[in-house]
Image 1 (tube, rainbow, N blue to C red):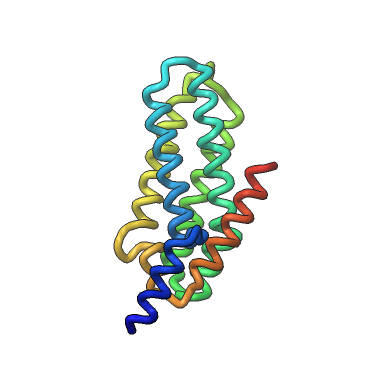
Image 2: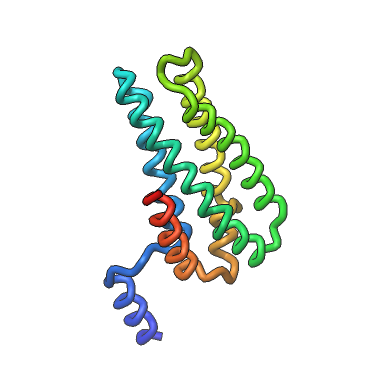
Length: 162
């Protein structure tokens, strides 16, 4: 028993890749920060820059979740309700992201759209991260979250470079 604890500690002290849940949560925190900056921004150029970052990050995030995380989650848990709800929430966010990307600060509804997107994402993040939510259920399952984290990171880097 002491031996496995030593091994585990040794592994965690190396620069090991984040597991899937850690990577996705880090994305959540980054976007939350950008939404807060958007709320405080005064200039149209700053708002446009932040909205662009938010939309790009969320587009990539939703894509890696839908391509890799959600299918692995569903296969491991067979939790149709959590899986389907997440997909539907993504669809609503993606529609609003397209509207934001197709407009700018000169659009009377621009700030309202970014604000509503922030509220939608806040709700979605709460659903994923709460006890009994998608991430908690993923951790309880037999998903290989470390290997999946490596796949998510590789795909994220590929998509961000596009």
